[in-house]
Amino acid sequence: MEERLPCDKHEEQIKTLFKQDEVLEEKVKEADNLKEVMYNLDKNMALQTQLLENVVAHNDRQDARMDEQQKTIVKINENLTELTEGQRILNKRVGKLEDQVEKAKHKGKVDIVDTFAKYIPYLILVGTGYLILNITKFIK
Image (tube, rainbow, N blue to C red):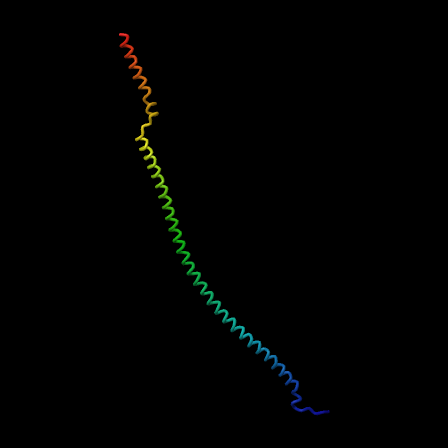
């Protein structure tokens, strides 16, 4: 039989160690890849955090503007309510003034038909009385 050298005896162990070394190298590469992925995730997380802070600040400013707009709208509504009430009062006053103007117009005019209709009974009485007086003068 052939005699084996001392390193030949450990040949299987060396092969196993090399295989383990390859496995460990793969795991190191995976760890490096994971490290890079973690770094990128960390950068993305920081960017998203900054963006979220900007969005929150923008929303706060927008909320403040909307609150101011709401106050302005409430004031406009109050002013419109006051103007509407004032318009109603003004319309009532104008209506009363129109009535007074119409009455004043009619006071200055003499309606002949109304006047004649009002005084016809008196005219008939006076005429009848005058006629009776004249008839009594002839009878005497």
